[in-house]
Length: 360
Image 1 (cartoon, rainbow, N blue to C red):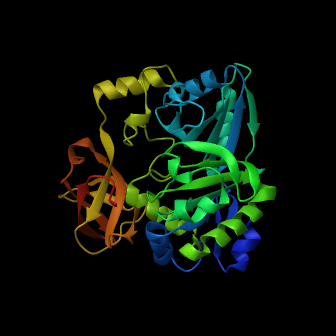
Image 2 (image 1 turned 60 degrees about the vertical axis):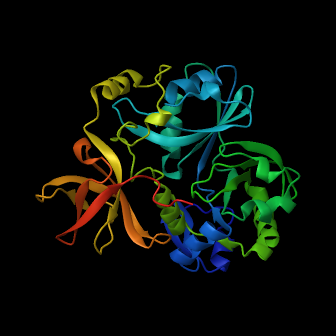
Image 3 (image 1 turned 90 degrees about the vertical axis):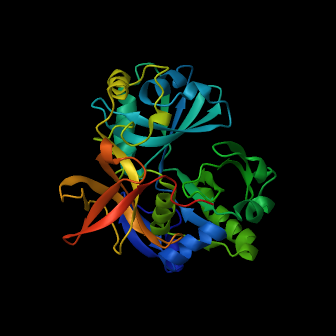
């Protein structure tokens, strides 16, 4: 089990630690609902240093990214980031990721912790262009400082005007006494804030200064459990749950990051799928009766026929109702459609709704 550079701090703070993607990670400190609330209304900090970072450099770096990702990275200017995915050869998804344009011929790819080796091998297998690839995952730490008070709480730590960093933009600047830190507004919670990328040797200093600066704003450490409830309220996909090697980006509602204005891995087949129409779709639903939908619970129709599975589900702390995501036949994917979630042999009525669940 690997540790992040901050594991000892989480343990000192009394976090409940669990194995996650090969790392020893804090799942919660004071409880999911309280931590969720902190991020929605104040400011909280996640240690997400388990994520993977690859640096791609050279005149053909963009060409390689264009080939392996579904979104159009040619639109990126320096200081901008883009959500994308790596399609596989059979219509599924190798991983979802964020692409940062750091310099003219340099890009940073941020990938899911559980897929670091898989993604590296996949991208390398398509690198017949001499692009220099470096895996920085073991050397870099990542903090997500999230919540509506994040900008105000952190402004004293940097010379950059944090309020001017737009969503999916970033700055390479000073932060918490460290030079050349990536400050990025690409949050996974829907409550604003940013991510801080720095070296492992620097992250403890950053963490301590973040908590000093944020003390007056009630800043707290937040675990992975609340990260999951926050992202689910926004309807953001989680790899391994809502998307995987068998789900197409079109089925997952990721058509907006699938650009057929260029050729990429398996683009022909995905284009054909778009033209012919998909047979199933990832939908958001709310339970109309008591119960909590969990990952892998069966979704059934009014006649009790199994039509799909819940991919993510929880009792929403912000809305105080049971919500979830799951794949259903396209005919039942329209807003207002009635479906049922099988919970302990009982079929609980649910309704397909529009995302996000949580509206500011």
